[in-house]
Every structure is written in C-alpha cells, then in structure tokens.
Amino acid sequence: GPPTTHLSTSDLMKLREQRIAQMKVEHDLMLANKRKGHGELTEIVQDEFLPSVMGSKRTVCHFYHKDFERCKIMDMHLTNLAAVHVETKFVKINAEKCPFFTHKLDVQILPTVICFFEGITKPGQRQIGFMGLNGEKQFDSTGREVEQGDGDDFPTERLAAKLGEIGVIDYTAKATMDEMRRFGLLQQESSIKQTVRGEVR
Figure 1 (cartoon, rainbow, N blue to C red):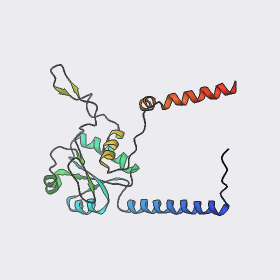
Figure 2: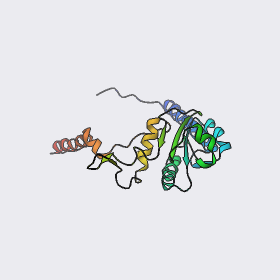
Figure 3: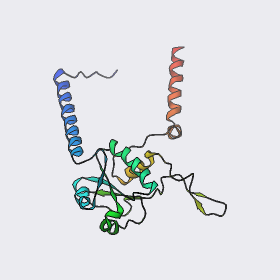
Figure 4: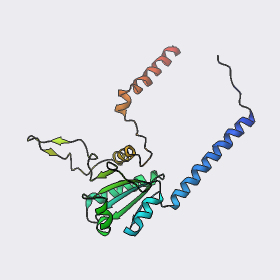
C-alpha cells in the first residue's frame, strides 16, 4: 500500500495550535459582531439607520408596518435567521416612522427587506413582499395568476436561500432527498451496502 506518513508530536502540536488560533479568531469575530448587535433582529429608528447599515459589512433591513400580518411573518423568519447567521446584522424599521429612507430607497410594498453591503444596496438586492417565497406561480382556468395556498406559508429556508443568493448571508442549501436521488447519492449508498454484503458471503 501507500507509504504511511507519521506526524511527529511537534507536528501535531503545531496543527493543534493553528486550529486553536483559528478558533480564537473566529470566536473574537463572533463576539465583535455580537457587540455590534448581530445575532438578533433589532428594532432601529430613522436616526440609527445610517450608522446601522454602515457599521457592519453586511446588513439585512426589514421595512415593516406594525399592523401588517405579513410583516409579522417576515419578522419571525428574520429572527430565526439572525440567530444562526451572526456574520450579518439584522434590523427592522417602522416604514411610517422613517419617511426619508422609505422614499429614498423607493419602498412601496411592505414587507420589503433590503440588503446592504457596507451601507450600499443595488437593485435586485431586496425581497419585496413574499414574491418567490410562497410557492410556484399558479394560474386559474382563465390564465389569471393565483397565489398558491394562502400565500403566507413558506419555510425560513426559502428566505435563507434568497438572502444567500444575494450574498448577504453565508448560506449552503441543504440537499433534499429528491436532489440526492437525482444526483445518484442515495443509490450509491445502497449499492455500497450490497458490495459489502457480497464480500461477506
């Protein structure tokens, strides 16, 4: 077989020290982010808007209306994501109480979620309402578009995928059983078991 490489004790110590140093850097970064308010969905007011979106590398800002059911649903999803994606700052702002930015950023539908990269956002870096989150487009017999189900029910994962696509969070999609089957990963697994059984006989 191939020659075995033996790692000396000092090599292992060095690797361990490197890994510990790396973990320390990651931990310090996480603490710094938490000090900046990462890790939860924070309510901000108009005066805090600019310092908020400029103060972090990546910020997700939800423009909401306090009486809209869909804004409450969006808050729930963003609260879930904020806890997991500490690399990004998650904030929400009452659209009625920040007319300047609502107008400047051309927010017309609530909820609207806008992604900022060091304070800058570009067209396409936003989620307007639940567009594209609540199922496939469906059409009635007259060809008019209808929303699927009640339109308000979608998994947080779908919003995560959209924010990941924009690049505002670090997101890796979980492979579905269907995808695994399609890429032959499940079959491989079962054929491996068969060959093992074959050898045992």
